[in-house]
Image (cartoon, rainbow, N blue to C red; front, side):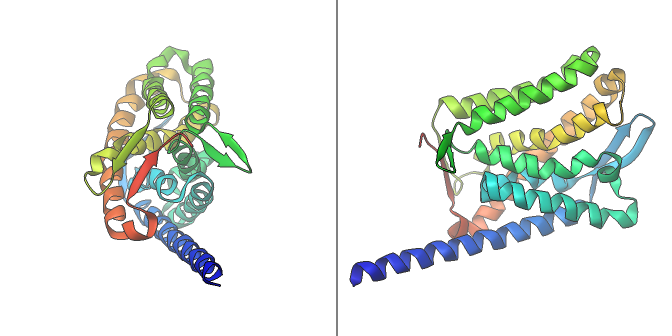
Length: 257
């Protein structure tokens, strides 16, 4: 009788934690939508400055870190749609110019979430999450270079992100978020690059922006944006874990499972 009661209490505890995680996910969606209206820089298109890039990119990786790959992808997809609708009164921003950008937070959350552990169990199968993330980054790099090899260096941050993912796969990475937000930086950097991948591919194949624009105009701006997104995302993540640490867990461990 006591054992059955303990199992029931455990199930109720898990259900409560899941509900709290979903609540935090809703908060992240709302935050993403609000920050989508706060400009960080201009989007440099084929015809010059045509829209804005917002501080919403700081939130995208956190969905994967807090919610995991599957749920993070779903909440990220909703966040992209919400940001698009909120941006419609001011022209729709970059979301309408490059529709693939709507998928940015979902892609960022999915692959950042997969990179949290050496292996992630999906439908009974153990998958090497960081390796899957590396494969995705390689595909993006190849798709870009096929068209814009003349500005090959634009993919250097993506190559660095792949190196970060390799490190996640080959070594145990353990940290306590209660000590320092700096330990979040590798993940927010990876997530910021993954979020940008949808914009990069859309710019290449939908807008057909020439390589010179990528290499000499967009590249410096992209570096600055991703640095800001990485640092602010880590700070924001630290705050979220400080506030909701008991509900979502204040420690993240990358272990071989």
